[in-house]
Length: 424
Image (cartoon, rainbow, N blue to C red):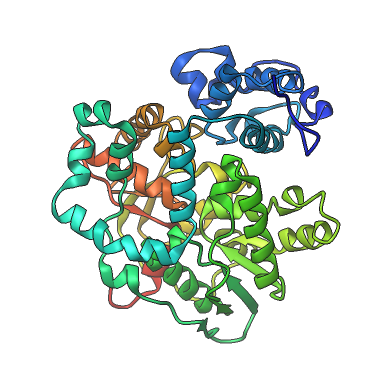
């Protein structure tokens, strides 16, 4: 029976850092759902150690059930680097375990579509037609979710985006207002640039209003976050290298999608065993900042903030809060908007169930978590939700609609941009 190979197997010294104290258990979404030890972080770490001897189907299943949300990293008092262990373990699985053909095909199709903006633009008209026909609403019905769970999961989170927005292009540069503070590159992303281009535009406008010259290069097409977090190591490495080569000339690289920021800050680990890239990757990752990190570090806003009368619930995207440790900065910026009331939902640390491609390959637990998150957000009585990741936005939208109480979801940069506009 196969075991982990010699290419970056989960390090035993990192595995042995876990003392099995259990602080991670209440923050782990799958343990909260099922109470199963092997579906907890410490249980999966035991399995990673077993993988050095043999890879079994149950081992793979329990690793696959992990959302990779990294709430356990935040909770762990011993500093266990579960994120690095999981990344290496998943790459080992994809190299050394023979998945069923349909599963392999689905994963390949997901990566070949969602990491390529050109292909996403090509399917945007079909997504628009699907919404006109009400297919996403049908896909959220329990019976259809039971019959064709993966297809229903994809249909349920299909974004409802005007074609003009999906097919449009942003300016390549936004001029800084007033005295220039610096020049930054904004990563457009793959899903983000097609279905959330308005978020990219809002981000660039806010940064420009605060004195930054913002460059919006067409390339790279994708930072590699989706394949990286799912173990598709060759594709993740190739996209990481392309991203570094395209953007390393800039002093700072700004990102507004939590999963992308997490991946780009991890490039040093991704390329650590490639002599031609390891140092470049480390230097590049040091230049990457979430848009809210950059603005909070820049100090008091230069541009006047106008009132935005709204009560919003702040949702912590896992790859922003847990993987990057960015929680205070977006809240600080939002609290600086007059008349904007910020409220906190219960169970902030639990994932919404989106988690990269998780809601497509594990639709049942993803739906349980999506509904749980939507109920917690609705319980705040908020008018809307603020979330800094496209997957979270789609998941929360789908499940609040399924509960019959649709909640609009905004990116923090959208509300900051709204506070600058005269014609809101």
